[in-house]
Image 1 (spheres, rainbow, N blue to C red):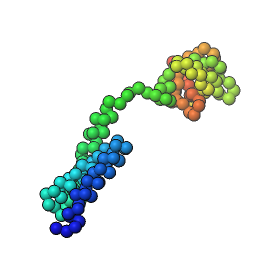
Image 2: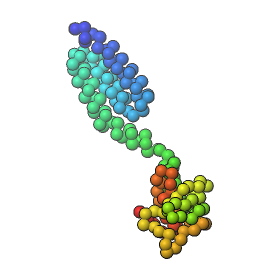
Image 3: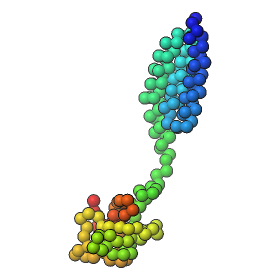
Image 4: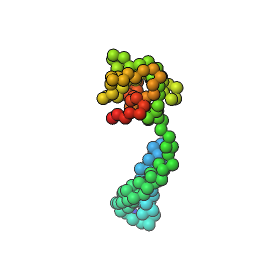
Length: 159
């Protein structure tokens, strides 16, 4: 038995420990699969496989786990996520009322249902003629571009 084979178990233990620590920081199941593959290499050493065979066992097991076990684990983990929309996504489709009418530069102020007042402009293709969008009229948010809400008058849709 050569020196490499007699101390390979220490290398496998160190790799398992390092991979588990990295997995605890990343939470992506990649390093967990590598740690389990390293455990396979360690078990290969316990059963007397040479170091190169231990390496093949660890690599093959890690690759199998990465492609066969990791995807279902990720699906199960992400299934219970919060479906509530947040930030800008929560504003899309929200109704509001015009506070300041759309002027010559096409911008106005809209107070949204959540109480926020946003600088706004009419969506492309919407014009203030023949009907002017005045104060108090209802609008829907179709997009957010920077700090400007893109709106359409309620009852109409635009792209």
